[in-house]
Image (cartoon, rainbow, N blue to C red):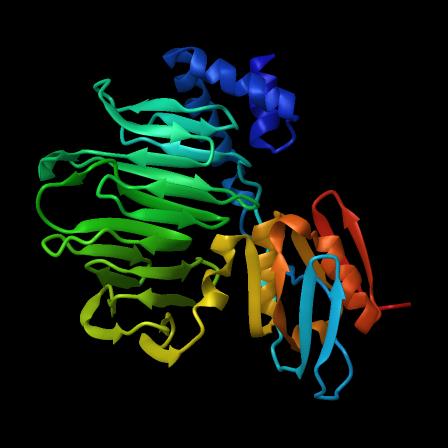
Length: 367
């Protein structure tokens, strides 16, 4: 029975009751936990070969060629159409991932966040290092540098999570994000974390220990500040938006290729050209997700579609070529809106058909 539930869970076919039963079983003993880890590794190896495929892009459609702004409001959704763009895009088909937030400890043990109450987080020696809440982890303490142990927190599509590191730094993690960080920072050296996805950092000040976010090909170094980093692997750029303080973005392989940011500026690292571009921005558009909103400003639909996929945990296939050329400006309240709300709103402006099968949305031309 347990092996059947594990198989259904890894294939994302388990019910809520089955998932809860599985988590209870995993936490019942170390043997059960090790058995699950082994099963997960075997499953990952057997499904790896099916993860490399492309799919056509996501949602909605676009309006006529006039440049007049059109204001439409539906439920809690507000969008403004700003005319035609020139973007044509493809999105990677999203692979099945666990729908629970997972914490991998330095010794390989896994912790799950399934809506339970507060609990203690112990290291491999049984020492208390953090308190675990349903939507947050709070760490504390320091260790000698040679004893620094890294934890890895993975947040699936459709969820967000907050993390308070042992130095007091607060990190908000967006959907589809993984952060590798010290369980407890060392007494000496830099404070290094490794990001894949998007996170908002409120860094505790410590002039003697610079805080460095390693994001693929770029590093972002700070002493104490507030900033956002977007470094999703499917995107060809890495963006760092500064709210207050100062940060330095540099090429990981060539630290001399660097730029300093001031508040209300965004630095963009371009993977292909190896260049860093600086521009003035309104940070509110890049940090709205931390307040439960999605905000766009003349944003290509290709970018918006990726954000919607991560936020609502859906796959979107767009078979309407005109849609890929549209830019949008507006705000969406995540908790009060659904993908259907957004689609129905846009249909009022530009006719199109769409169908939903489980979590896959297919957009087609109007008949």
